[in-house]
Length: 619
Image (cartoon, rainbow, N blue to C red; front, side):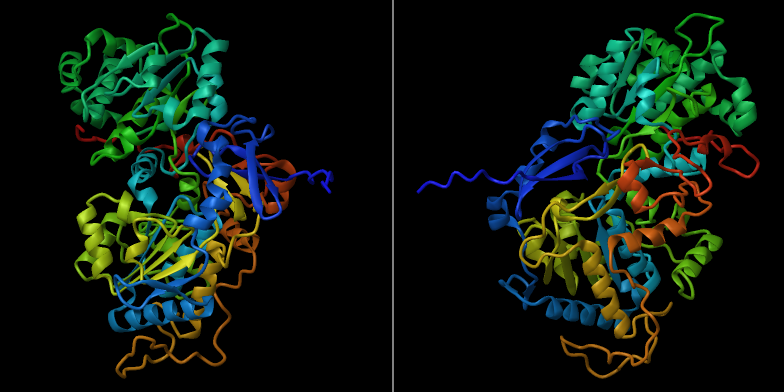
């Protein structure tokens, strides 16, 4: 007899898309343990219900077929390189991992291990990884695949504005009179953001869009003016534009006097960037160069009027370059020279590639950073983080960046690698060196949701992690907006949340005595070490540095670390994010709202000035 009972309505869970840095809100539909659909969240301020093709098909990555064929469902261990991986229990896997790391730290020191993590991780995951490396083990050898895409943007903001704080927001698109897009095919890479540009152009036909890109892209086709410069001439272009602004009297002298320093020293350099040389070098016309400069300066709406606001959008075309920082600073110099910052519709806006590269930067998940945008090189910052974490000190020796870390492993300097949520055997540059590193390292751990990545065959231990629809925590998008990520279904098999794996591993290291600036809190054993060697657990040891039981408990500690910093979020908590939705930082406890536009460009230094006008080399 046919059962006519209607199927129950699907469960709906609000979360965040995991593809790019736009940070679109999604509503996940699920039935039982299976995700069945996804649609845009109409209440999320990043996308208001819109989704791109990838976002709208996100649920297909969680299909039952993909889970059966590709997911890592249990810890796997290889007894020898190149051999088959066999399933083991979590206890066995983490005991083995902690024993191997403790052995290597004892024999070679804390800098003999390294952690390579990902902008796909949640902020809570990132935080515990950073604390594990820098606070517990005592090494700064932790870096992220964000190094390959966003480190130039970080350095550019810090060198000019004094803080890694994008000063603009998505709403500025609707208020700009000129949008200057450099090194970004926004229509393809950030399509939901591009929809906003299309909407702005429709609502305001006077809006001018300038695209600076060697390629004729979909974004370039949309532009009012396309500058098809020669690859590598970005700095030449931007300095040439600044030369014209100075020559034509288009600088905002009052703004510069009140908020900037260093321009006089840059003037001598600018003399070399006359329009004829710049146009010839960049292979564009002098007329196009002058038109782009006038638009950027906001002088295209007639003399005597208010300067029209300019918003720049830029991405990997500037960042992924050996002179990426120079390109970023040269572009930001244009904003500072014309006062195109800190006001509605204006500012330099770096578009983030990954969904939580911003969150990783916030918690200090790079080899040269510490929690809450603190600098590892700053002794006061190291002391602040050490006090927060309750450790004697934070090591001052700079850690290995992503490329350096794999080179060091290939050279035999780094003996153990822990890779999480990223695929260096496919995505890192210089693949020969990366694969040599994975082969030479004594011990490689891969913490991953999928068993089929190019890195998986190199791992001695594979730890199954939860995927996007199974995770709980937060991410931060390009406009500094913190959104909740919520689990719609339980992780399959014995997969676990990334933060939970790290906390469990850290506690086992603590029990083995790995806890001090020198790596151990008890005398190390000196006998011959077997493959399953482990220090004797300490009786009556100190309270764990990792007492966390939920993502929220981790986030609360991260929040405390931001007090008084440029990204102060002490006015936020999970409850507020639940009731009021995604929020932008800064949002300090003494404020009743989050900040859409950030004032780093106005008050970065104690004297109220910035340090914008660098002398970037051509590139």
